[in-house]
Length: 182
Image 1 (spheres, one colour):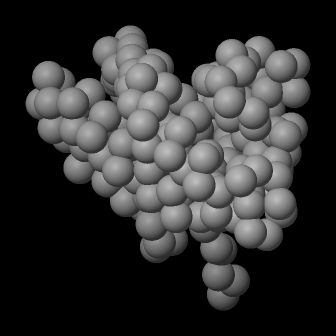
Image 2: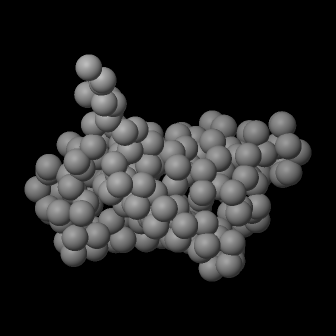
Image 3: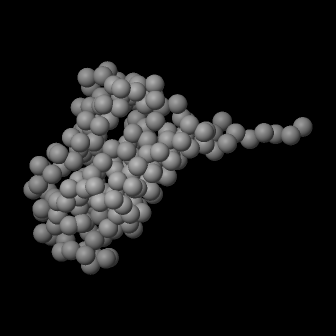
């Protein structure tokens, strides 16, 4: 008797990874960004990552994260950042999706602020100086600490995009994925 294994990804998940990863890649490759402080920009890649990872799961999130990072100015640092962000997002997404509609954007904003600040302050900025010698650590670090306006706008764009997706396509955004194959 032959044993049929379940595929690693469903066709829905492959489609989500292809569409949202492709859009995120094209968005950055075409330079559709607002420059802030080199190499940092404001764009929608992260919103596409959060929507795709939430709807498709961790493997889809990692795939989209890789595609987000490839066309960036610092792909090695962005690869780490987007992959880690997608996995941390998947850790809370199912619970977040089940919350009341009014609480979802508020909790998402707070969670994303914490999850994004950690990799930026602890790895991204120090690695940019001490490993890649791209910028001076202290001025760059303090620019980020004392520029809450940039963080506020960046996260607001992500949460507004997510909220629109939750409201317009709730069945699509419902997490129908599992961490383990059964």
